[in-house]
Length: 312
Image 1: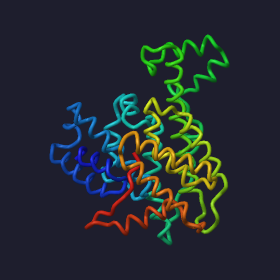
Image 2: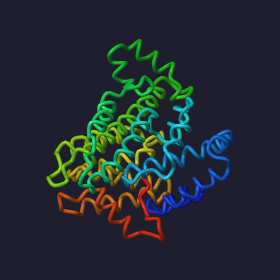
Image 3: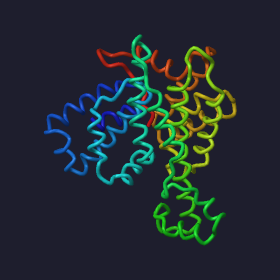
């Protein structure tokens, strides 16, 4: 199932992803459940990838996960932060917040259709506060550390494994890529909260969206392409690209998709670029990436499974 999804990703970001995930979940349960499957390292890596896709799909569709949340809790109960980052490009701590936001997004969308239900925004604001305040030693700004204290900064670089056995400059660049990648994810999640939960959909969107989008794109483009870390930032690039009205910044989002399409030959990036163009083409202040995705999901329905967009 992982191979099938990977092949489909190579041809388009738009596909029946929930159908694939549902089949994968059925296979796991038929194989005595998650615990038995996790004992096989190769199978565990495949499950991690599928769970990552499930959560990112739940984030943009706002319709919840296919796999039970217990899978996420059980899968990452061990110390797997480093292997998870290598697979997704997203720091493990931020992924935990992403899991919660994806669940809240489903509940929020359901609450908007009900008369007697009020969504508790304080829960989202608590997650937002954690994201704002998040920092981690492994993802710090090493350049700033060196400028504050050259000896301390140099020691951080020397002890870090991100740059392998390269020179100090190579190690510093590798460490700095991790910082920019983490910050791109952090600002992308703040951007998500601002748009999905805090925006009053009867009124024009806040100009804060454009400012957070700028910060997100700044961090994406500060990440070197040569390290392949930048490749993992398709979802942040999409969210930020959708929220900026500046033509130069929009061009950055388009260039990101074009460059990685050429580099990887994965049409997922090209499909995302086309979706950005559709979002930008709408002149309605009530139109946003969520409404565009929802409409295209309905129009692309196959049997009981709609087509969705997978960003990474």
